[in-house]
Length: 252
Ligand code: ADP
Ligand code: MG
Image 1 (tube, rainbow, N blue to C red):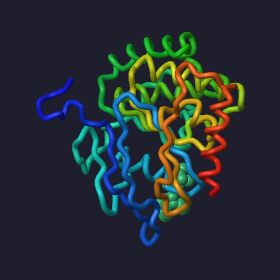
Image 2 (cartoon, rainbow, N blue to C red):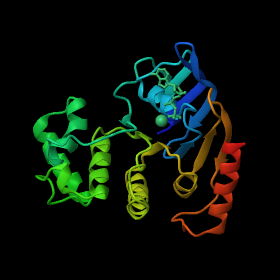
Image 3 (tube, rainbow, N blue to C red):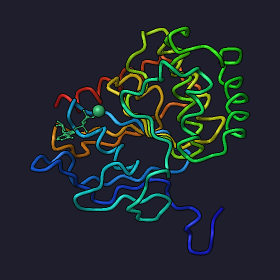
Protein backbone atom coordinates (compact mmCIF):
# COMPACT_ATOMS: atom_id res chain seq x y z
CA UNK A 1 0.00 0.00 0.00
CA UNK A 2 1.72 3.15 -1.18
CA UNK A 3 1.51 6.28 0.90
CA UNK A 4 2.18 9.87 -0.17
CA UNK A 5 5.70 9.77 1.20
CA UNK A 6 6.31 6.39 -0.39
CA UNK A 7 6.97 4.71 2.95
CA UNK A 8 4.42 2.01 2.26
CA UNK A 9 6.62 0.95 -0.63
CA UNK A 10 9.78 0.85 1.46
CA UNK A 11 12.02 -2.13 0.88
CA UNK A 12 11.70 -4.86 3.51
CA UNK A 13 15.47 -4.99 3.98
CA UNK A 14 18.27 -2.61 3.20
CA UNK A 15 21.98 -2.64 4.04
CA UNK A 16 23.34 0.89 3.83
CA UNK A 17 27.12 0.95 3.61
CA UNK A 18 27.33 -1.70 6.30
CA UNK A 19 30.61 -2.90 7.77
CA UNK A 20 30.96 -5.29 10.68
CA UNK A 21 33.80 -6.61 12.82
CA UNK A 22 34.25 -9.27 15.46
CA UNK A 23 36.84 -7.48 17.57
CA UNK A 24 39.85 -6.96 15.30
CA UNK A 25 38.43 -9.16 12.53
CA UNK A 26 36.47 -7.30 9.86
CA UNK A 27 33.84 -9.73 8.62
CA UNK A 28 32.04 -7.66 5.97
CA UNK A 29 32.82 -4.29 4.41
CA UNK A 30 30.79 -1.57 2.68
CA UNK A 31 27.73 -3.66 1.97
CA UNK A 32 25.01 -1.88 0.00
CA UNK A 33 22.03 -4.03 -0.84
CA UNK A 34 18.30 -3.44 -1.15
CA UNK A 35 16.00 -6.44 -1.04
CA UNK A 36 12.67 -5.71 -2.70
CA UNK A 37 9.31 -6.86 -1.42
CA UNK A 38 8.45 -10.38 -2.52
CA UNK A 39 11.93 -10.97 -3.83
CA UNK A 40 13.93 -14.19 -3.42
CA UNK A 41 17.59 -13.28 -2.93
CA UNK A 42 20.34 -15.88 -2.65
CA UNK A 43 23.58 -15.07 -0.88
CA UNK A 44 26.69 -16.99 -1.90
CA UNK A 45 30.40 -16.66 -1.23
CA UNK A 46 33.39 -18.56 0.13
CA UNK A 47 33.38 -19.95 3.63
CA UNK A 48 34.06 -17.15 6.12
CA UNK A 49 32.94 -14.38 3.73
CA UNK A 50 30.36 -13.10 6.19
CA UNK A 51 27.14 -14.63 4.84
CA UNK A 52 25.92 -15.67 8.28
CA UNK A 53 27.01 -12.34 9.72
CA UNK A 54 24.87 -10.47 7.16
CA UNK A 55 21.87 -12.65 7.97
CA UNK A 56 22.45 -12.16 11.71
CA UNK A 57 22.64 -8.41 11.23
CA UNK A 58 19.32 -8.47 9.35
CA UNK A 59 17.82 -10.52 12.20
CA UNK A 60 19.21 -8.09 14.78
CA UNK A 61 21.59 -10.56 16.44
CA UNK A 62 24.62 -8.54 15.31
CA UNK A 63 24.97 -4.79 14.84
CA UNK A 64 26.96 -3.03 12.11
CA UNK A 65 30.22 -1.44 13.19
CA UNK A 66 29.31 1.30 10.73
CA UNK A 67 26.40 1.89 8.37
CA UNK A 68 22.76 0.98 8.86
CA UNK A 69 20.36 -1.91 8.48
CA UNK A 70 16.86 -0.75 7.61
CA UNK A 71 13.70 -2.83 7.87
CA UNK A 72 10.75 -1.46 5.88
CA UNK A 73 12.66 1.75 5.39
CA UNK A 74 13.30 2.23 9.12
CA UNK A 75 16.83 2.23 10.44
CA UNK A 76 16.23 0.07 13.47
CA UNK A 77 18.69 -0.79 16.19
CA UNK A 78 16.36 -3.37 17.69
CA UNK A 79 15.42 -5.70 14.85
CA UNK A 80 14.80 -8.79 16.95
CA UNK A 81 11.37 -10.19 16.24
CA UNK A 82 11.03 -8.24 12.99
CA UNK A 83 12.03 -11.18 10.82
CA UNK A 84 11.63 -14.94 10.63
CA UNK A 85 15.17 -16.21 11.06
CA UNK A 86 16.37 -19.77 10.60
CA UNK A 87 19.93 -20.21 11.90
CA UNK A 88 22.58 -22.16 10.01
CA UNK A 89 22.46 -25.22 12.24
CA UNK A 90 18.77 -25.32 12.90
CA UNK A 91 17.74 -28.55 14.54
CA UNK A 92 14.43 -29.71 15.89
CA UNK A 93 14.43 -30.45 19.60
CA UNK A 94 14.45 -34.26 19.87
CA UNK A 95 12.39 -34.30 23.07
CA UNK A 96 9.57 -32.26 21.57
CA UNK A 97 6.96 -33.67 19.21
CA UNK A 98 6.62 -32.26 15.69
CA UNK A 99 3.69 -30.11 16.81
CA UNK A 100 5.58 -28.81 19.87
CA UNK A 101 8.66 -28.07 17.77
CA UNK A 102 6.64 -26.16 15.20
CA UNK A 103 4.94 -24.14 17.93
CA UNK A 104 8.27 -22.94 19.28
CA UNK A 105 8.71 -20.05 16.84
CA UNK A 106 5.32 -18.60 17.68
CA UNK A 107 5.84 -19.20 21.41
CA UNK A 108 9.03 -17.17 21.24
CA UNK A 109 6.90 -14.43 19.67
CA UNK A 110 4.70 -14.55 22.78
CA UNK A 111 1.60 -15.73 20.94
CA UNK A 112 -1.19 -17.44 22.89
CA UNK A 113 -0.67 -21.17 23.16
CA UNK A 114 -4.13 -22.36 22.18
CA UNK A 115 -4.23 -20.17 19.05
CA UNK A 116 -0.72 -21.19 18.17
CA UNK A 117 -1.61 -24.86 18.51
CA UNK A 118 -4.62 -24.50 16.19
CA UNK A 119 -2.65 -22.58 13.61
CA UNK A 120 0.23 -25.04 13.80
CA UNK A 121 -2.20 -27.91 13.13
CA UNK A 122 -3.58 -26.12 10.06
CA UNK A 123 -0.13 -25.26 8.77
CA UNK A 124 1.21 -28.78 9.34
CA UNK A 125 -1.51 -30.08 7.07
CA UNK A 126 -0.69 -27.44 4.45
CA UNK A 127 2.99 -28.33 4.69
CA UNK A 128 2.31 -32.02 4.06
CA UNK A 129 2.92 -33.02 7.66
CA UNK A 130 -0.68 -33.73 8.66
CA UNK A 131 -0.91 -36.86 10.80
CA UNK A 132 2.67 -36.52 12.05
CA UNK A 133 1.95 -33.97 14.80
CA UNK A 134 2.52 -36.37 17.69
CA UNK A 135 5.67 -37.97 16.32
CA UNK A 136 9.19 -37.14 17.39
CA UNK A 137 11.81 -35.80 14.94
CA UNK A 138 13.69 -39.12 14.98
CA UNK A 139 10.60 -40.80 13.52
CA UNK A 140 10.55 -38.54 10.43
CA UNK A 141 12.53 -38.61 7.18
CA UNK A 142 15.20 -35.95 6.61
CA UNK A 143 12.94 -34.05 4.22
CA UNK A 144 10.03 -34.05 6.66
CA UNK A 145 12.27 -32.86 9.48
CA UNK A 146 13.43 -30.02 7.28
CA UNK A 147 9.88 -29.04 6.37
CA UNK A 148 9.01 -28.99 10.08
CA UNK A 149 12.03 -26.75 10.75
CA UNK A 150 10.86 -24.38 7.99
CA UNK A 151 7.36 -24.39 9.35
CA UNK A 152 8.69 -23.42 12.78
CA UNK A 153 10.39 -20.44 11.12
CA UNK A 154 7.28 -19.46 9.14
CA UNK A 155 5.18 -19.71 12.32
CA UNK A 156 6.92 -16.52 13.42
CA UNK A 157 4.59 -14.86 10.87
CA UNK A 158 7.11 -12.37 9.55
CA UNK A 159 6.98 -11.54 5.83
CA UNK A 160 10.78 -11.20 5.73
CA UNK A 161 12.31 -14.68 5.95
CA UNK A 162 16.05 -15.16 6.56
CA UNK A 163 17.39 -18.66 5.87
CA UNK A 164 21.01 -19.56 6.59
CA UNK A 165 22.00 -22.62 4.52
CA UNK A 166 18.69 -24.34 5.21
CA UNK A 167 19.15 -27.22 2.76
CA UNK A 168 22.76 -28.15 3.45
CA UNK A 169 22.11 -31.35 5.33
CA UNK A 170 19.85 -32.98 2.74
CA UNK A 171 20.73 -35.57 0.11
CA UNK A 172 20.41 -34.49 -3.54
CA UNK A 173 16.96 -35.93 -4.26
CA UNK A 174 15.39 -34.68 -1.04
CA UNK A 175 17.13 -31.38 -1.59
CA UNK A 176 15.57 -30.91 -5.04
CA UNK A 177 12.14 -31.76 -3.60
CA UNK A 178 12.52 -29.31 -0.72
CA UNK A 179 13.78 -26.59 -3.09
CA UNK A 180 10.56 -26.87 -5.10
CA UNK A 181 8.46 -27.10 -1.98
CA UNK A 182 10.11 -23.99 -0.53
CA UNK A 183 9.56 -22.08 -3.80
CA UNK A 184 5.89 -23.07 -3.61
CA UNK A 185 5.62 -21.74 -0.05
CA UNK A 186 7.41 -18.53 -1.02
CA UNK A 187 5.01 -17.94 -3.92
CA UNK A 188 1.92 -18.91 -1.95
CA UNK A 189 2.60 -16.62 1.01
CA UNK A 190 4.31 -13.81 -0.99
CA UNK A 191 7.21 -13.77 1.45
CA UNK A 192 10.46 -11.92 0.92
CA UNK A 193 13.30 -14.43 1.26
CA UNK A 194 17.03 -14.03 1.76
CA UNK A 195 18.69 -17.43 1.64
CA UNK A 196 22.34 -18.30 2.14
CA UNK A 197 23.58 -21.29 0.19
CA UNK A 198 26.97 -22.69 -0.76
CA UNK A 199 25.41 -24.33 -3.81
CA UNK A 200 25.63 -21.97 -6.80
CA UNK A 201 23.20 -24.00 -8.92
CA UNK A 202 20.69 -23.94 -6.10
CA UNK A 203 21.07 -20.15 -5.93
CA UNK A 204 20.45 -19.73 -9.67
CA UNK A 205 17.59 -22.24 -9.68
CA UNK A 206 15.75 -20.55 -6.81
CA UNK A 207 16.57 -16.84 -6.68
CA UNK A 208 15.51 -13.68 -8.48
CA UNK A 209 18.94 -12.25 -7.76
CA UNK A 210 22.18 -13.84 -6.60
CA UNK A 211 24.49 -11.78 -4.40
CA UNK A 212 28.13 -12.91 -4.51
CA UNK A 213 30.46 -12.05 -1.63
CA UNK A 214 34.25 -11.99 -1.79
CA UNK A 215 36.52 -13.78 0.67
CA UNK A 216 36.90 -12.03 4.04
CA UNK A 217 36.35 -9.21 4.54
CA UNK A 218 33.19 -9.92 2.58
CA UNK A 219 32.36 -7.34 -0.05
CA UNK A 220 29.76 -7.62 -2.78
CA UNK A 221 31.52 -8.82 -5.93
CA UNK A 222 28.41 -8.89 -8.07
CA UNK A 223 24.64 -8.94 -7.87
CA UNK A 224 23.36 -11.13 -10.68
CA UNK A 225 19.70 -11.10 -11.72
CA UNK A 226 18.48 -14.50 -12.87
CA UNK A 227 16.60 -13.97 -16.10
CA UNK A 228 14.73 -17.29 -16.14
CA UNK A 229 10.94 -17.48 -16.00
CA UNK A 230 9.22 -19.63 -13.38
CA UNK A 231 8.64 -22.47 -12.88
CA UNK A 232 12.24 -23.20 -13.84
CA UNK A 233 13.76 -26.26 -15.33
CA UNK A 234 16.89 -27.58 -13.63
CA UNK A 235 18.18 -28.81 -16.99
CA UNK A 236 18.11 -25.39 -18.75
CA UNK A 237 21.55 -24.71 -20.28
CA UNK A 238 21.22 -21.01 -19.32
CA UNK A 239 21.01 -22.09 -15.68
CA UNK A 240 24.27 -24.04 -15.92
CA UNK A 241 25.98 -21.21 -17.79
CA UNK A 242 25.00 -18.63 -15.20
CA UNK A 243 26.03 -20.94 -12.35
CA UNK A 244 29.41 -21.48 -14.04
CA UNK A 245 29.90 -17.73 -14.47
CA UNK A 246 29.07 -17.11 -10.80
CA UNK A 247 31.37 -19.90 -9.65
CA UNK A 248 34.15 -18.18 -11.61
CA UNK A 249 33.24 -14.89 -9.87
CA UNK A 250 33.62 -16.60 -6.48
CA UNK A 251 36.85 -18.42 -7.12
CA UNK A 252 38.25 -15.35 -8.95
P1 ADP B 1 30.14 -17.44 6.44
O1 ADP B 1 28.75 -17.62 6.96
O2 ADP B 1 30.19 -16.77 5.10
O3 ADP B 1 30.93 -18.71 6.44
P2 ADP B 1 30.53 -15.92 8.90
O4 ADP B 1 29.62 -14.76 8.79
O5 ADP B 1 30.10 -17.05 9.76
O6 ADP B 1 30.92 -16.43 7.42
O7 ADP B 1 31.95 -15.41 9.42
C1 ADP B 1 32.65 -14.34 8.81
C2 ADP B 1 34.01 -14.23 9.42
O8 ADP B 1 33.93 -13.81 10.77
C3 ADP B 1 34.76 -15.56 9.43
O9 ADP B 1 36.08 -15.35 9.04
C4 ADP B 1 34.65 -16.04 10.84
O10 ADP B 1 35.79 -16.76 11.23
C5 ADP B 1 34.52 -14.75 11.63
N1 ADP B 1 33.64 -14.93 12.79
C6 ADP B 1 32.37 -15.41 12.77
N2 ADP B 1 31.83 -15.40 14.00
C7 ADP B 1 32.79 -14.94 14.83
C8 ADP B 1 32.85 -14.69 16.24
N3 ADP B 1 31.80 -14.93 17.03
N4 ADP B 1 34.02 -14.19 16.73
C9 ADP B 1 35.07 -13.93 15.93
N5 ADP B 1 35.06 -14.13 14.60
C10 ADP B 1 33.95 -14.62 14.05
MG1 MG C 1 27.69 -19.28 7.57
